[in-house]
Length: 120
Image (cartoon, rainbow, N blue to C red; front, side):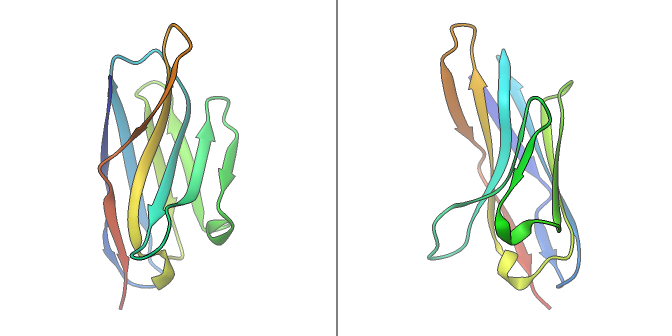
């Protein structure tokens, strides 16, 4: 079982910055991917960014050039640095972790979500 703890959300003015963190703990064997998704009211959940174990990253089109995802393997933590925030970035941000156990079974885990609000 893997537990995820998210932190770093809050209220910020347009153009500001926030940094989200997601720490994975528990019985961890291998984490091929860690990422962030977001869901605004009345909208579908969408990909924000994902980082693979080899360091490859992928971003949603709306955040390219503004957000940066990184990962610390040693403590199984992912970070999302968000710069140039816009009101349309307002959403609940969810951490997602793909965990592969010793039998190669892969399970997707979700964090509880952290609110990001961009408003003046």
